[in-house]
Image (cartoon, rainbow, N blue to C red):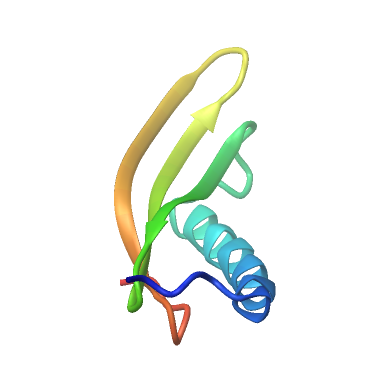
Length: 81
């Protein structure tokens, strides 16, 4: 049986997710693109990993170009794999 995320884990997880999103956005050259974004959406977890869908792209009035992939985060270190 998988251990639920504790309140403390969630408090640590939220800033880590935002930091990873900002880093990924910068790495993809989207900091200055109108409508550029990187978004991690959690969809599952187990005792070792947290599973996310990573969406990266540009979505605005003129363009809607989004890529999507599944990534894992180490539940202890909060590093993306």
